[in-house]
Image (cartoon, rainbow, N blue to C red; front, side):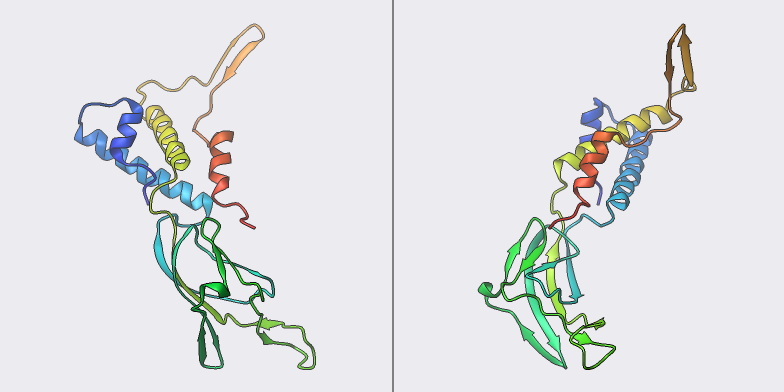
Length: 199
């Protein structure tokens, strides 16, 4: 999922003309930085269909892997070859933005114990099957801005003809220049919002 389009980036950088080579290079930068940001976040952000199995939690919350949740096709318990589908909306509630399913009587944990006389489950089974669409249909505007800022900055540095000044000092005033860009504190703050704990 590219976090911005070529035209959005060119508008951001104040580029009004068309140069095929430069535009092709900018497209590569967009793809590379978008992939880097999503790798840092730890998940694919693009809206897709998923069929996933989960263990029970013995709590009222079941946290889905991909969010926000756009739609749910089915929530099923699959136990001993029998499929029990939760069709009634009142059986669970959905927090779409966080991707959390809430069920008042809990998402029961099933499985086996090392000691068959014990109530403890040492080997839980992934008996809950959720079919849903999760992810962003549109790139969040703050992530789009981070991508455009980063691509713009690194592209300008990469295309400079003169080497970057490494250090400069007069009396007790000095400046240091980095060899390569890193995400700023504000950019990291935005990126971390999309891989944070949702509960």
